[in-house]
Image 1 (spheres, rainbow, N blue to C red):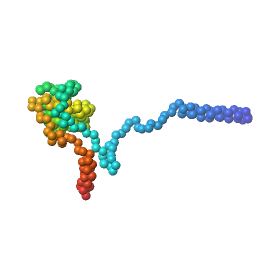
Image 2 (image 1 turned 180 degrees about the vertical axis):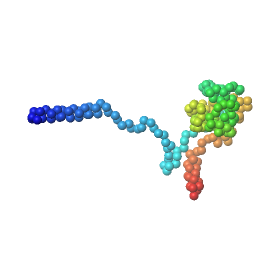
Image 3 (image 1 turned 120 degrees about the horizontal axis):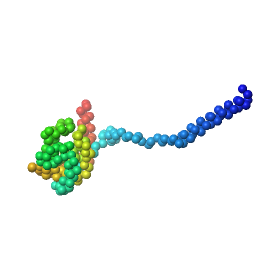
Image 4 (image 1 turned 90 degrees about the vertical axis):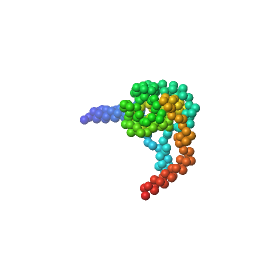
Length: 210
């Protein structure tokens, strides 16, 4: 091989290498993928307090104390949204959901012939008190696992109080308004009581393990 031919081959290899390096550099600049700061899909886990004690889950705000002065007409208006799935008049047929005449004070899964979820069927001996209905309306899926009701829940306490006040009137003999004892039982425990109860519960658990 002559020196001229060797120089040509060397020059060709040098140009090819330089081109490859240049293409790689340009590609990195054009196609630049930043690492996300957090996962696209978050996996929810239950939070815990220091020491491993679980944080109390959110619960429905009490409404029994509001029922005596709740706006019944407002509750009737709110119920119009529910009428897409439920009937409310006495003797009216069920729709997608069961008829709700006399629901306050009735048993769970009380409507004859309606195809309730297994979760509600298992609660058939439990009474729909105003407090129970408040919790259900706040978050149906949390109240009973596997419920067929797709409604996400009524978050405003005033709205729940209004519709419960109206539902109470949809009966042959409306149940009595909540007593002071029932109102007190529904109210959440003061923070001080909860703080005292937690260590006591831990002590009891430790005794059970011994």
